[in-house]
Length: 492
Image 1 (cartoon, rainbow, N blue to C red):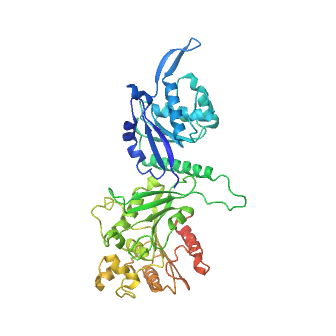
Image 2: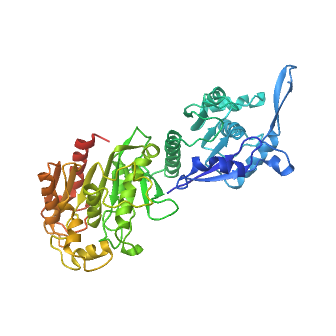
Image 3: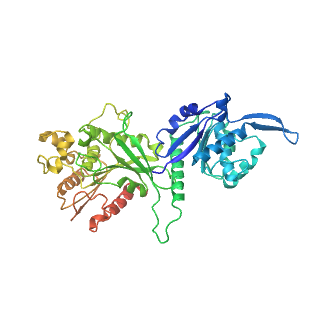
């Protein structure tokens, strides 16, 4: 994915190291979108501090005025820095935020003398304020006329830079995005601020991509809007397994439903059929989440595979505010063995609780609806050692699993009246997982009075995935799914 390169400017008496600590919580998880380049003010090299010093004295017309001593040095130094390696945007805290506004004002004005930095396409300002040096007035006028997109983070309890000063700075931008918090002069990382930051950076990435592709070939079909994704580890302190969150294009419009995708692979891998489903969900207004989970290829089996899936559902709900998700509309979509894993969560959401899952005591792993594509459901129906490409043995990590244990994990035997609504489909001539699995699950739902939509297509091999390019009737399953989702959740 395209990344933004952002110049980061510290506050008065600060440094790059100080700013790094101040930004830590705010910037956590933003690596997929941006590279943050933190720099020291040039004054630090000579034992001084700050980007300038405000000195009050007589102005040229004899009245009182403020001069920013050190401004010229800072301006020329940053212009040189930007010329060496251009930045997409600028982030500033406190005096660094005031400087960020001046820099983008120079870009908007198109200054050549004094030198201006290379184009900065956006600015993020935390606890910022306006310059009192009159020589900067033209820069604010340029901002009002043609300033870039801007995000302003304001602390209502800030006594160092009062909130009114930060709002005055924001008012000089043509379309400022303002988000406030109840704290003081800090780089806050509340859910609302994190959500606004993600949305803002997402828009800036799309702008960058759009500019690069702004000259389409005559007669070429229109390109799909760019989607943004980020990787989030499932467990603290472990990079893998993870889940990839894909967001809908365009600005956020409130809380959206989420669809967690468990791809197939016979429990030997977690990247089998179902590729592209998270992006498909995002293109239809949902937050699409593809989940990595333990398999034989990672040297793991039950209960790790189940724990990973349960953690993914809980994590989506725990970070719903940050990711713009409605925690009451979290669905799961499972293909083949991934369908078995999804149906395990829906039928037995507390089958096993990982002691490291700090979310388990307060957040349920049961999804709000279930979508199953040619799912493996039963560990007894049609079972023989090695059946379903050895999925049963790979799930448990061993052979010779007795029937009593296999029945415990046969999800058609555990549907209860509290089960969420189900959409399930398969094909009659699936040679790998018999259609009777999906049918048995649908029948169990009906007996428990659980809403279910079941479609048995006459033809199609196992592992069709989204089937968008198929010529048979199975290609319409996603269209039927969208209709069904609208009935369950309303239009995304």
